[in-house]
Amino acid sequence: MRTLLTTVRGAAWAVLLMLTPGALNAQGTSPWVDAVNELQTQFTGPIARGLSLIAIVVGGLMFAFGEG
Image (cartoon, rainbow, N blue to C red; front, side, top):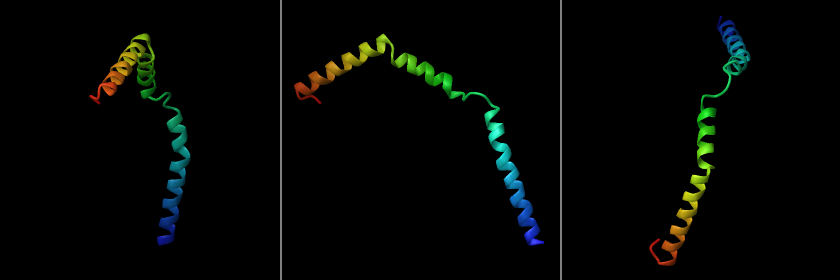
């Protein structure tokens, strides 16, 4: 009886593992894709580049005058 239960349990896991990839692929795109693309657009724009340049200059001045 114990081997039958183990066999049935193993078969159930095998069926579950075979059906899982199809269900995961049927969902479509990840919900994070749009958010990550929006952040990438914001971080690579001209305002972000200007702010990063200002931050680098301020950091260099702080390093030069011993504040950092």
